[in-house]
Length: 147
Image (cartoon, rainbow, N blue to C red; front, side, top):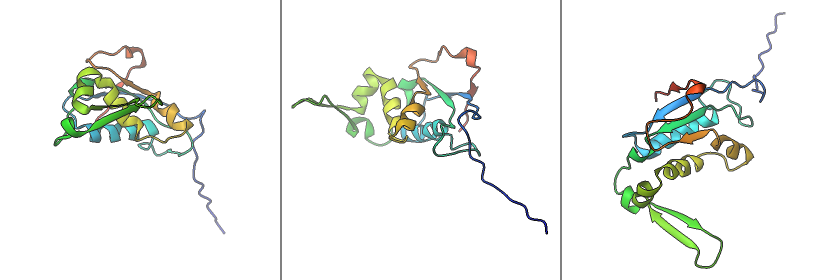
């Protein structure tokens, strides 16, 4: 009697290998870009994905100010902040935020797609967003990530 036992392999924190990828955001549609980035940060593109382990890779996003919104989202989409004090709620449109702090648009969009746990806060730290086409991570030898 030949019994083969197949066990599901669970990734361990010490065994996970993290790669570095570069993404050029120029001309990319915002929401589609954010979902792909969140997918890679979470590690779902790997066969060894384990939900309770940080299996994801590092992502460097360039040209943050050149992303594209479809429809009327530039004028209608609002980003709200609240200080915690009465009357401390502020809202800005996507156009205003993209003109002043384009890096923040990508960070907020991707952060909203990650788990709202300690693991999610650990994953968002692997995202590096830059306005221009230059980045200081050449030593990590990042590869271009093709979607």
